[in-house]
Amino acid sequence: MKKSSSRPAPGQWWRENRVSCLVLAAALVLFLAVRAIAAPEKETAIDAAEYAEYENAVITEVLSDNTFTDPAADNALRGEQILLAEVKTGQYKGEIMQVYGYVGPLYGGQLKAGDGATLLISTYADGSHVATVYEYNRLPALAVIVAMFLIATVAVGGKVGAKSLVALAMTLVCLFWILIPLLMKGAPTLLTVFLVCAYITVVTMVILGGVQRKTVCAALGTIAGTALALLFGLAAQGLARVDGLRLTDVEPLLQLRQTGTPLGLRGLLVGGIVISALGAVMDVAMSIASALTEVHTVAPNRNTRELFRSGMNIGRDMVGTMTNTLILAFLGSGFALIIYLYSLGLSPYQLISSSYLTIEVVSSISSSIGVILSVPLTALISSVILTRGKG
Image (cartoon, rainbow, N blue to C red; front, side, top):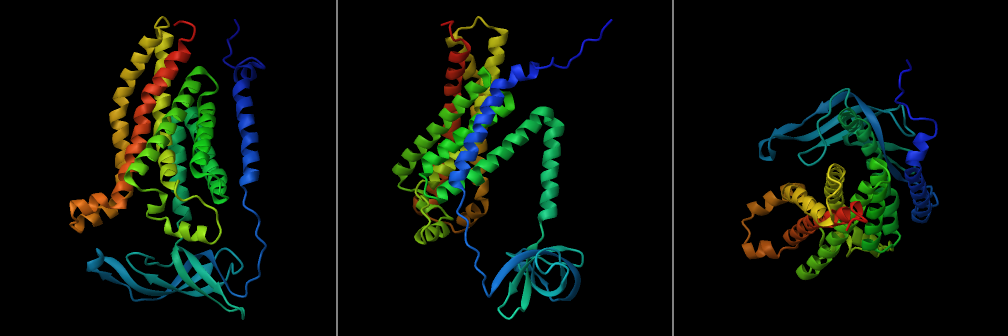
């Protein structure tokens, strides 16, 4: 008796996945084309007489250490160290340098023999060079942390987890190779952010689930939800009279624009809202589309209205926790500043009128609006597509 094989017949995999492959191929072509447009122009190298560079090194010996514990700084160390370090990268690789390390609560850290460090090496016109400790070399630690994340994702998620990592890598590449270079070249901020987020949504859904009704519903629901987050963010910032120019870290970008970089700053507030809402909206949309697909498979006789009602019942259970998650994420990102503002004992009127609080409220609520409204939108889109032809 022949054993049945679980392997697909020759050509079966292609027949089942050819549409997904074609969509991903088209997405790759589009990515390469846009990247060619977005790529920054190559700068002509200038041989500077004096320059500075950052290189990795290993501390071989501590020559002196006058650091001390400062109770006023939560027992953080202050002081200076004189160290010997062997340079591991760059033009001075293999050289043993005497370096200075400045230790304080807001910068640097005490080093000992065997520690990795990143050095700031300054080279002068006469060929001499000196080095100071910039920071710990955190590359090995970050590599371990990322590796643990990758292993956990694949171990728990299996093939789907591996696909999610591919989608995550694609998202990061789009943000750093497409979105930011385009913005630096003067592309309209909000339109560019929205189109890149829509592209990320489509490619992510295809990678995770292929081209099928479930992923189409989830992608459309995500795009609709982020569009509404964008529109609500625009309305909210107009009502509150704030925009990207009032962001905490916008001053260096303003200086960059004044030196000729045509970066649109006013749209950065709402652009950040759209990007921060994308993941949560995508999660909600996929959950509802997937659940309604299962409901439709089990009960195919349900009409559009009944399926929509089921989607709303499922979505209501998700809204509370997801909205809470978004707002807590915004509060957590500025937790230190919140504590500082609290310690000042500010007048309620002063605090409420501050641009910081207004920006945080606009950002968190606009993102939450995108999540909330993606529930009925995805439920409606899914119920219409899944019951198409039934009425």
